[in-house]
Amino acid sequence: MKKQTFWLAMTLATTTATAGAAQDMQPKMAQFVTEHVMDWATDPIIVDAIIAQNAISGSYDQAKINELDTLWMAQSGMAGIPLIDDVLQNPTSDFLRQRIATAGGTIAEIFVMDARGLNVAAAEATSDYWQGDEEKFSETYPKGPNAIHFGEVELDGSSGEVQAQVSMSIVDTTGAVVGAMTVGINLASLM
Image (cartoon, rainbow, N blue to C red; front, side, top):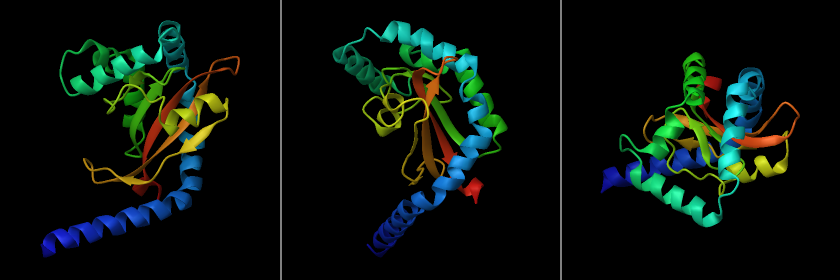
């Protein structure tokens, strides 16, 4: 019981500390995004992939989106699943994985969303397919071309790293918003 109480206290202390650190880390996260992400965030490989998917998913109603999201979550972790493979095994996802590889451990994850909030490409599988009901989408895409959203600072259970997501609107060459992108940043690398 003492061991459980100790770990609960440590978890609460970490959560409280990381929640307070969110505001403190925003300037560093914004600087990193400005200096290391924005130069490739509107690369044609990302923008063209979003535009291509928008042409397909633009006609989806909420029932279709919910159906795809449920299917994704039910099949997550399985091999050879067309919905998941289409997102993870495409040139845009390869491009995102290259960005992670060249970031020296600072970027933990990247995924791109279309105008409906559905995954277009991802460096690795996300927990769900539809991000449209989350702030990473609702605080970016509908807010315009310069929208940026800083997520909560969290302890990643699988890596043990303290991370936060920064999400931004993605625009085409005319400046029109076509989708959004989320970048998970390993905050220890910014200190």
